[in-house]
Image 1 (spheres, rainbow, N blue to C red):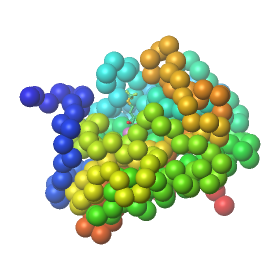
Image 2 (image 1 turned 45 degrees about the horizontal axis):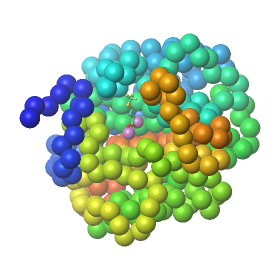
Image 3 (image 1 turned 90 degrees about the vertical axis):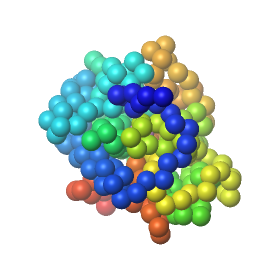
Image 4 (image 1 turned 45 degrees about the vertical axis):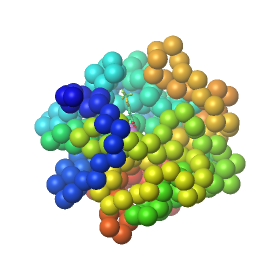
Length: 272
Ligand code: MF3
Ligand code: CO
Ligand code: CO
């Protein structure tokens, strides 16, 4: 079988990568994080979501990288922008962001063939306390998942830690989308569910690369897909949030490839 240019090719095998894979993912992850850092000052009331997409695409191309989503399974934009009750895969367009919105921006870049995939939450102007709380719970949920990443643990330990925490905060974990292996391929084995049972799933080994990207709803977990075939929204119209990192399993834990070099991954609305 031949590989495809857009990374839309599942091997179904969990690959174990060596030092050159880690080096490749460090570069890709860093550029993806820098792209989200770059967008921060532009996420203000009145901004047209398509403008944020243009800024991201130009930034990625200016840095000699490729936008992985552009052309991926027919997707026509560089980033996904998912405000308020949009769970994920919101398509940038004429929609403007308004004061009080929360929005996830998800970007994936390809650098020297390696995929860096990350998303974070932005607040638009002043944000209501319950929206802030959701963003806080989602950020912390990802942290709880990351804390489970080390050789010998299982993928189910990640999901269980996330689900247990999120539900203890009276929020819900989206079931219909999961984290995924990545590397030279965009979406591959293993699936990383953000819910489940401790001690189940694949055993984590040094050299595995995958994303953790929990979607958390203030209301119930079911989602529905809009007619555009991409945009997923909460069925009950409750607010939804998401945070995503691309990581590698190391000999003694985890390396976060998509950490922000300037420490901006933790949403600015949570500052203090
Ligand atoms: N970046 C998304 C993920 O986390 C995938 C978006 S696919 C797209 O896996 F085509 F919608 F861009
Ligand atoms: Co992803
Ligand atoms: Co993503």
